[in-house]
Length: 198
View 1 (cartoon, rainbow, N blue to C red):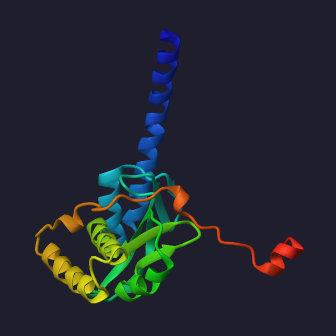
View 2: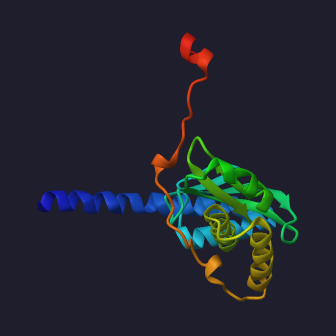
């Protein structure tokens, strides 16, 4: 037992510099990115430490906090709701969204993304609290608690208040329980494909 404990301790010590180097590499990388990406990157590195993966244009954390993954992109996407900003941070949860709610979610916020095959629901914004807000309201729509119009109005009011330093539970964490990987729907083969095997 002592030998196993010693081996584990040595492995942890050996891995520590690599993790530290990985974080330093990520910090150096985002330092040269556009401001929205740089700010989001600094916040994510502070909250979650070194990313799981990094490329010249993305940092990716897997299984961080409540998220299946968090993807920070160098290149921002312009988004004007509820005010002009740039989306750089996509955060994903497993969640089975009923097909009859897809249109409502698209009308609510174009940066809320449903992937039926993977069984995921994600939000893309410039800050993690705004992703919490977007997904909590998406859940309200899915569950029938709010209409699209009500969700958009609440989002705008809460985002403005957040900008002024006021915190709402909708911006502090997920207010629903995410699903599991089993939420994915691989669909069915088309009749012709089933007959021909491809």
